Image 1 (cartoon, rainbow, N blue to C red):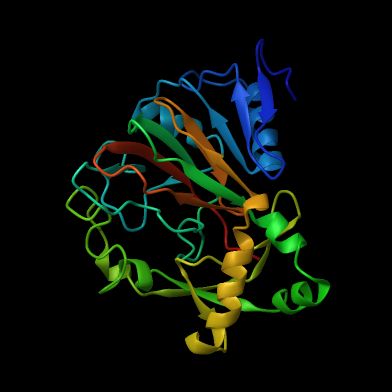
Image 2: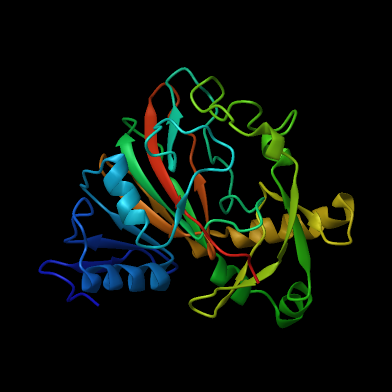
Length: 287
């Protein structure tokens, strides 16, 4: 896998997931062998990292498109008219709230949640602002056989209502001011059903597929009945031994597999500015 180009190297990040890839310039077109090696690392490690990249919205989008069709965020108003698929994730020094500050998988409140995302660091705080990732294959595989069997027959209901609805965490603005306005309020509250245990379409492995931001109940259960089991699964799915922590530097890039990885953006940099550019790759209906 490491023969794609001179200097190409994949260094596993932790025992649970993640790998840092060296010797690649993502601003330049990748030949098929180089991208195939990157893609294998992506599937094997769940999240991959690159340092010291220099990307424009166009080159970031071109790289993301190698994984599949890129798509705009279903809720956030784009900042770049020529590249509506690029979401600027911004927290200004005076803001207290950050985007993605709870454990989640991206946009599971849609019929076809994202396959993955490419996140690029533009402006980094002097300290803080790391991102945590958690392996949902391990979350499933470490459950008891009885729990696996029960969950394998269950369906969960996902919605954006708790996050973007009235009184929700995001409200009308994601960043707490006007840095990330919501673009499509008419989509708030729609519900979609996904299996609690998802089979990855490329690896064939099973992953736990519920998250505390968008999973609101189990099919056929009330929210009150669902809460105890969901709370257990949320805590179980983000155990420290399933995860890794990435410290950002300017020009760093993370690419995660949204089908088997959860993530959380730490909000520990009040008084500093942070700006990231994210491009998401469209996915398929989970099964």
